[in-house]
Length: 294
Image (cartoon, rainbow, N blue to C red; front, side):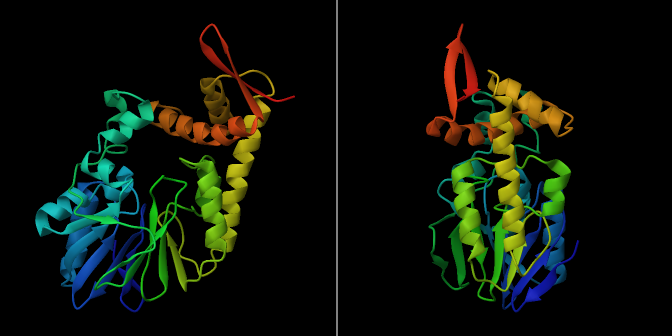
């Protein structure tokens, strides 16, 4: 890992999660912190090598692979942590992530560092389309992957797009990207198509100057998954039945963590189909049955 200068005061270290830094006079704002304390330790070491003092971490959203380094860095530096109002409670109380995914008290198998980071203290709530004073960092809402997800545009014209889009090579590898709100994700893709920036940096994927091919790949992927669900529901199915068939079709090795993530994405895709009447709901002996309108 190393920080590479993108433009002006904007830096990034690329890895499983791309982590940004905006640095003025040796003081740094991080954009996300990686997936665990090990990541936090590496980021802090890299900053110290450059004589940067970390003053703030902006979390684009609450998922553990983006906030996992918070606690280590905050304890060592006493830096602030900033997030949107919808994401902040999950950063302060990360046990809520597996609980939301499970819809109740989560089993230990999903209360792991992949889905539950160490708690850290959010000190600043970020409002959409505001600029953080002194740093000049613009906060841009990017809902879809997470309900309160934000992106960060630096004064250098570098836009950190969080998980609003994922590179096509990663989509092709995994097939089912996590999505919390299908309709908002589509709106975000449309917004990104016309967004002006010199560089776009997704959290998972390659730095690019033209975001349109990436948004189009993500749009195709989610629409294809929605069509798959409609096809699966040509015969009555349950939510678990849909999850199982999607997993089989995409060759996924299932475990409890994978199950709750795919179930959430399936639910996000089902909601607009149910709202539009394209999929009908009925109950048979208390079990929810889902069927495409014939």
